[in-house]
Image (cartoon, rainbow, N blue to C red):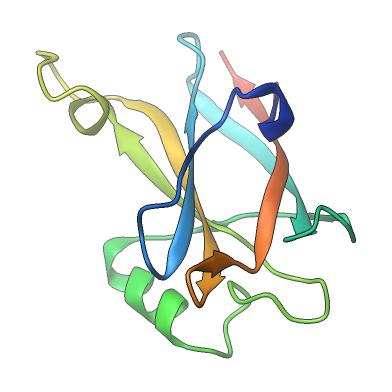
Length: 128
C-alpha cells in the first residue's frame, strides 16, 4: 500500500520546531510490517531519493534528532526519516480496549522553522 502526500492521505503536522511530522494510519487488516520504503525530496520538491525509515524508540529519539551526524539530517540529498509507531490510545484517547498499533508518525528534519526535506510517498508491505 502506498500513501502519497500529494493526494492528501498523509496528514502533515508542522507545529514542532525541530522536526516535521507526517502521520500515517495503517489499514484495519494490518498485522505485521514486512518492508517500508519512503521517497523524499528537498524542500522544493526536487532531487527525489528512495530510502528507508529508521525505527525509533523513546531512548534513541533525542539522540537521532539532536546529533548532527545521524542520517536523520539532510545532507547531499540523503536522509532517513524517523518512524514512531502510534497505538490506538494515542490516536483516539476515548477508545477502550487493549491498545493496538494503528499507524505511525514519520519525522523529518527542520532548520530555522522550515523542513529541509519532505516525504513524497510512503510504501508499506504488510501481512494481513
